Image (tube, rainbow, N blue to C red; front, side, top):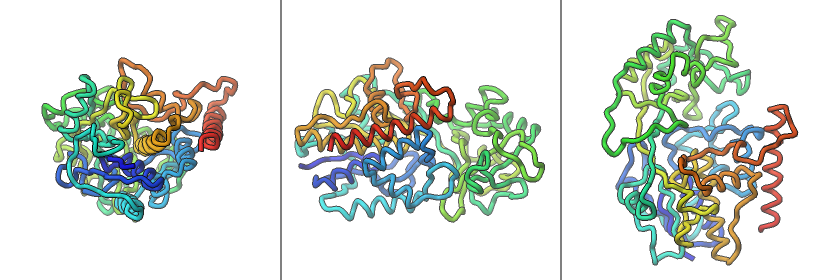
Length: 433
């Protein structure tokens, strides 16, 4: 059996691994470096372009539960992420370069893989038994045009990337290391602001000059990745109750909770670079340096990467996809990654994994592998296939699962969701080997 995968991102790489270890021949098409995107910086497979965080590992969260389920399914990318992680409190964050390099090493060690560095927009290809479109939300125009032949109302939204600064350029006299509520030790660097500093910063942020968007980028801002300047426009305290919330933090210099706090997270294992958490932005580069420089600790900050804003594309999944990520109109085509309607790094990995599992099931004449709705994987798979006139990409969430109503304590209820999901996934795997 020969499979074509379009896109060498997280979903494409996980899908390729799962197929290769099952004995399939895989042609993985990655258009970079011949054709690049506004967000990618390298030609490596599995490059992380927005944040370096795969979110929480706490099993009492939907993200932590998702990781537990993916371990049961032998996710290669999750394993590599854990092996290349950097300190990030209760989150799984990785060294980007080490992560991509290890993913490539894992794939190239398997027989049957051919990586083809060229653009490919042929969805229905008779040269292959199956095709998986894992192009990600920054697919090329030719592939986007091909996708619109499946549906006329192909959707898009804006996404934004946060800046990265060098560690040595931060003024540590105006910063302190701590995790919220004491979790994670020194994993986050906190930049406190008093009321006056916060108000000056937010006012300048609201009035700063933004990049003029091109015609192809016109559309709506995606709520899950809101630019910081857009949040500032929504009210004077929006940021203070959002990414700059000071709850759970005490400044050791004052022994009090700051009025507002900017959090920075390590971008690499050595701690040479820091990511401004929640600071996705579309400000002009000079304005980023000027406005973010109003934060005392960043007055002389050196930027490794400025924030950028770009278009993200995704399909109207409920119209065209089944719960197993297969195309309703053609049993030989699957969609994985964020273009399929899942949102987030780990969710993209999950989608690529399930594309591979269901190709293998279909090739062997078996029913699709779709775990029960009590699992976070199964719940998200059902979400993207459920009719919704206002469909938007979705992260995993316990709110997608059947409700647990007999536990009133919120913490205990979340733990119950996680335990039930993992137990049901184990049972489903055992029954559907």
